[in-house]
Image (cartoon, rainbow, N blue to C red; front, side, top):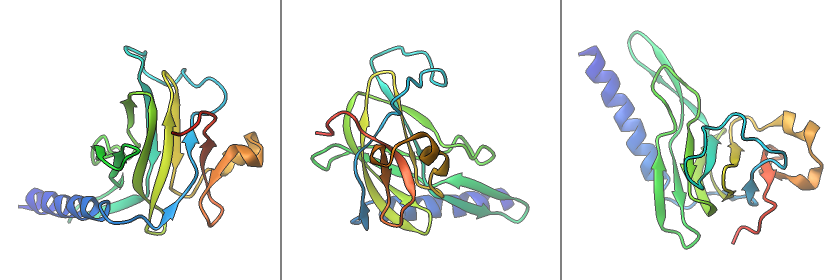
Length: 171
């Protein structure tokens, strides 16, 4: 009974997130791309020409009668013409709160995801072969500011850094 209540709550919250992702996002930021330096060390060996995407969307807590789980919220990936390409649950399980790293064909996409503060954002991203594009919608990435020049960064309107500026034309 306890397990079924927890699963019901998680299913309900997942559906609510999916429904919300179909609404118009409140913020649009510039294109995010891979870091300028090679970042292949942390990636799986490339079996194809795919690139990789990691989205640190807002974290939500799910509470059962015995435990609390913290997971990244789901997000959607869209083609430049607005068609849904893929939905990502963005968790490896209830006990592993890390964001998923997913493989995508190279190109330009838009992601719709929740940022901290319950802000739904639309972020254009550029995926390059064998490179990782990382988007941080949690508290932002203050450490990135130490490594980059201001023009190399993409920020939310409130100033939070969400990633490296794409060096490849997004479209």
